[in-house]
Image (cartoon, rainbow, N blue to C red; front, side, top):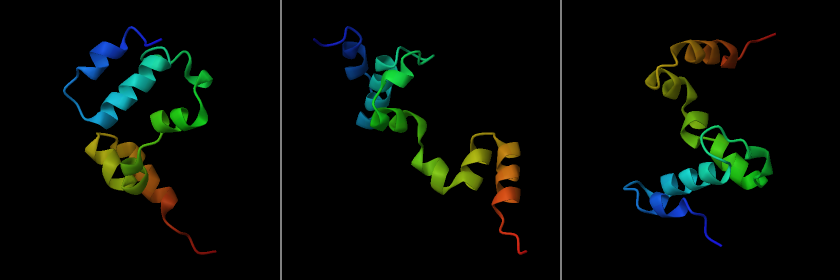
Length: 82
């Protein structure tokens, strides 16, 4: 049986990947994600992981206004010789 909220998501003018993320958020119970733990691992991973942030973290954080996190990332990610 289709979910009642599936209709509004399918009519959004966003990319297919965003529609998929919004569908997962809806499946998890809305923005607060009360049913997050009930989702399969792959779906939980899809909601939590951002490939651009993973690859371009030091640049992504300041672009999103998270300059403190970017500074800490660079400090702790820098290799230290023993």
